[in-house]
Image 1 (cartoon, rainbow, N blue to C red):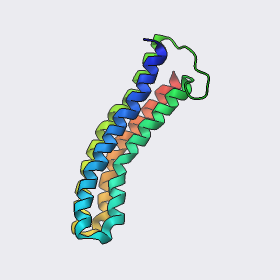
Image 2 (cartoon, rainbow, N blue to C red; image 1 turned 180 degrees about the vertical axis):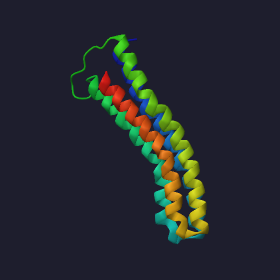
Image 3 (cartoon, rainbow, N blue to C red; image 1 turned 60 degrees about the vertical axis):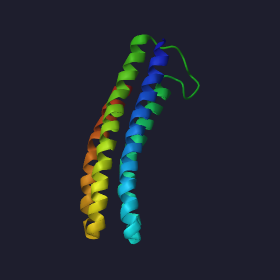
Image 4 (tube, helix red, strand yellow; image 1 turned 45 degrees about the vertical axis):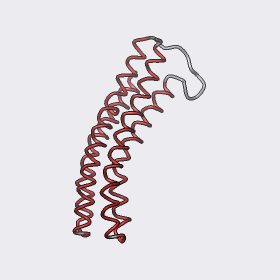
Length: 154
């Protein structure tokens, strides 16, 4: 296996795991939102915002994947060969957002579902629920920042 292949696997790892976490999170929140919307359709806009929050981790994983592919020349037409050590460096640079994105999106979906139920019972609590849900995002952002610093440090 070449260094470039390992780096590409790292990019795929970042996008796939963060994307899976987002799919879980958005799906979990969507189930809650559908139930509340069926009884209170006027809350749809607020519930949609809460449901969408766990989707950002997938975007972060995609961003890290693009940065890796640009750095190794796969995007931009300058694909060259990179050694195994550099390939592994890119692979592990993808790990923080891959793992933090997967976990934080999953748990953010749970927080979003709870916030959706809270908003259904008390629509004035929407901002509180959004704040509680957004706090989980912090760890995905930190994972993304570490991945970016590692990618640019290679």
